[in-house]
Amino acid sequence: MAIWSLVNKGGNFIELGERFSIPPILARIIRNRGVVGEEAMQKYLYGTREDLYAPGLLKNMTKATSLMRQYIEQGKKIRIIGDYDVDGICATYILMKGLSALGADVDYAIPHRIIDGYGINEHLIDAAHEAGREVLITCDNGIAAGSQIAYARSLGMSVIVTDHHEVPYEEGPEGIRYILPEADAIVDPKQPGEEYPNTGICGAVVAYKFLQVLCPEKEELLEELLEIAAIATVGDVMDLLDENRIIVKEGLRRLEHTGNRGLMALLSVNGLWGKKLSAYHIGFVIGPCLNATGRLDVADTALELLLCNDERQAALLAGQLKNLNDSRKSMTEQNVAIAVEQLGEQVEDKVLVVYLPECHESLAGIIAGRIKERYYRPTFVITKAEQGLKGSGRSIPGYHMHKALTQVAHLLDKFGGHAMAAGLSLPEENLDKLRAALNQNCDMTEEQMQKKISIDYPLSYAECSMDFVKELDLLEPFGNGNVKPVFAQTRIKVLSEKVMGKNHNVGKYLVQNQQGQRYEMLYFGDLDAFRACYSASNLIKLVFYPSINEYMGRESVQFIMQEYDACEETKP
Image 1 (cartoon, rainbow, N blue to C red):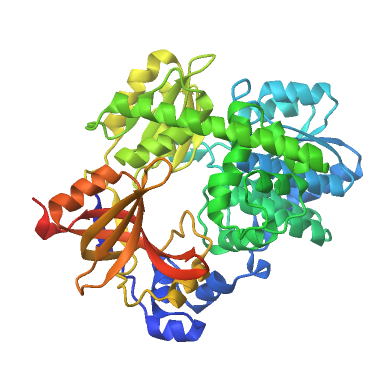
Image 2 (cartoon, helix red, strand yellow):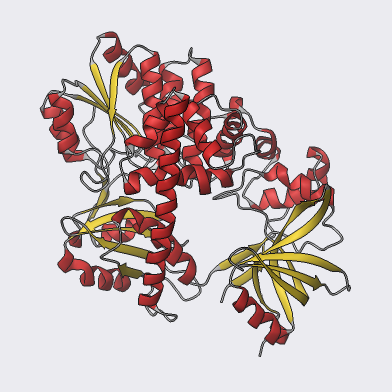
């Protein structure tokens, strides 16, 4: 059962509302997102590109870009080593466009998820060396590739690392020892000694900032690439606060009128061209389509789409991406059902380790996320690979996944990630040992393993005017770290229900509050479970978000229910 609590971080919301010409409720919500002070509030509401942090603040940025400038001037052959997810694809595209614009002799290679695994490896290094490439620059990977980078340098190659992942470390009697690769230059906001104000940027934004320093004169190109940085920021689930929020806001504005033929085709094939776009469309349509190629095929297809200048070819590639994503969705649903059947309704483990040997290894992370949401436990989904086992994990607040894997590193062949997500590979015989060790080491309490629902404000029906609902758009883009406002009401009675939708999975309800006011509410979820709750409890409490319903040219406010529970006094 979830724990509901009202967030109240305090502040003079009436005064703040007047200062920024917004309703006091919006000022309260923004404060609840950790935004403190008028300067931060101004940046949150009206921040522009001018408010982004100076890229030169990143440690080693001056050194890395100076080296790259030398390599280009010397005519050295450069290869970008990216990654197969949306962040890696976007980062590779950004570097490819920027270096090409400077006249560099540059090409790229993206690892194959199954053949190569994550990041730079000896096979990719050998291929680059045989092709006469003298310089390697990584993006969205490389920080954990110490031995591989040492190998590249032993072949006489220069290596620049741009990444955003956690630096590997060892714990000993003298404390933590960070293990950095011996590259010619490393740009990673999480490396020791970093003073950059925002460590939560994705790999593509690191690449974007690299170009800001490398070629500041390419203003038009940098403006164009902002939409790619925005796609990566949302797709890699970065917090949409501080400069990340500005990047996504500015990027979305550009994306609606993009000149990139590949993106135009991808928006069109998904029925989004010409429509107002939000972070939702990146997170649940554009990002998954780009990701699907790296999951079920080769990520090069997504990069080809972004680089494509031919309208007909772009349409063909966009269609391929959409079809792959549709297949990915179907395969995901099947494997989630298998995982749920395997776990059952009651779970005793604090850390779930689900073995799905027949599952495509590229879907492990998505499935882990779905299982984590259902049971609210840190979850690892392990699949059978060509050699041994591979898996991905998704976490909950209070459980640092990368630290947890560091404690069981002796059982693993390879691992990496951060607090909320990780990837790993291991020998098959270590699977049960891994499950046991993760659970033995886990010190989370029962309360930590209960889902928390933080209520921003107990919004009444009288306060929910059409103007107020429209003003909520000022809080966009929503996403990780800047979730949609969470409103709640209590002692609500359900008067009637109408089941809608092609799959009969949408409920439309007439509900009544304590004051006798009646209004419409929609719910997209388990209708049977909800029906059982309100039938048994009579009165419910609910979490909702108000939206505007347009029908026959008329607008009206409707509530979209997100969570529910029986009121305490009516629980059996």
